[in-house]
Length: 328
Image (cartoon, rainbow, N blue to C red):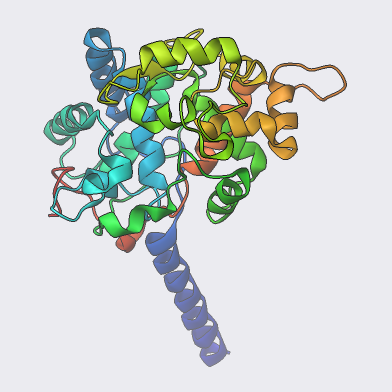
């Protein structure tokens, strides 16, 4: 009996060892991950975001965009923060990304309080949430526990959706990361705050390919003249226009109202309304009769949590950088 018991005990210990090893290597994120190891982590990040937001409210949408651009390349691992001549930062889609100083400030405070504990990837995820809250948007629980990636290549950024891509192309890119059509419409709804440069949509105003010398017919004719004034053909295309011209600083559903009225700035944004598969979701956020209404704030939080878990690195799959802009 003792021999059998010893074998059973050995087997149980072996199973438990493997379970622990698996959990250490691949455990997922969870809300309150730093409750014991760094209790002030979330409040430190929130304070850093608020401090920068007070002097420059435009940093809010910038942080939200940064998190999105990070997650769509190698997953949410802070690879967008790494410096280097061929890093993601240097790729064309990321040249306009800003807000790095916010992340650096939060990281410096965290290293002073809890050295080597909080990842840059988690700072990004928390900062994106806090930025939305400061724009009078929803607050959601952010699962944490990510580790930082060690690879950042400009050549890998082709996974990012483009401003002129069709809905089908956008769907494919989102689906590749486990995000569905509702997630697509919802996350693009982040354009309810922030601005974009004329260079990303001015081609729609004067020489739109599909119609020759005219403007994109999906733009409201009255709105075309307004945009042409803001982005004249003689400009250097560096001027900026609000993505949601009705409430650039407020997180709300007016972005979808603009799409309904042909006032989407980016071609990829307006396509959400011209394509039937995405229009019905946009209409649901506007409470269109005959469709089940959706609460944009609730759905946005859900989709953000879903997106923030793309390709998460945990355990030995990543590291905790001491400086977010460099590989240790």
